[in-house]
Length: 246
Image (spheres, one colour):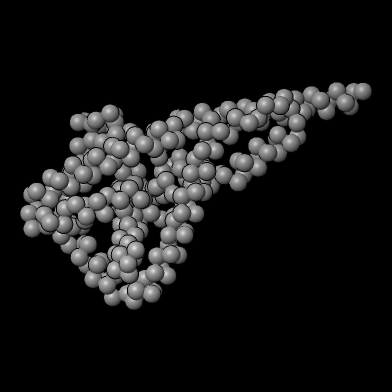
């Protein structure tokens, strides 16, 4: 890749992170108005929502030529962002076997994955980003020395990749917390389960709050885990009681 190509890649990645952070902030604001409390939205640990970063990059790459035609830009932004949201919802459900959001209770929805209520804001965001916000951020990024930009991007990319790996591992564990527990009753099993819950409690609760529509599935898994722990404790007490009688 040429130097110009490298610089372009670094610029786009930095824009991706910037828009992901802005998206995270918007989700926080929306939750504050809707739920009257702050909810740390997003699948990842860090303060960013990648779907916003990916969506804004798509709009910039595909629609910059329509910046002077607001109506066309608005309509195309709705189409592109809606397709992205639908595909993202479908892919995440196939990968993690969990439904991350569901608009089934809203009017004019398609399979609960997208709905008219979210499409309109997509169009508005598209117009604002392509016409005003992105030119502003590009000017700021162009002021950064190429060497400094490279260092910033490498650090951010490393943190982002680590975040993705950790977050994916946690979500997969939400499905498999009791899958490997096969013995009837041992102290080792009990300690292992308690350790898992202790180590993952923060992210467990965080993901439930960020994606309320996952709650039913996750709560069922949580109840199974609690029941398993209760059974282990019960059997351990019985064994202890029998030993004392002997």
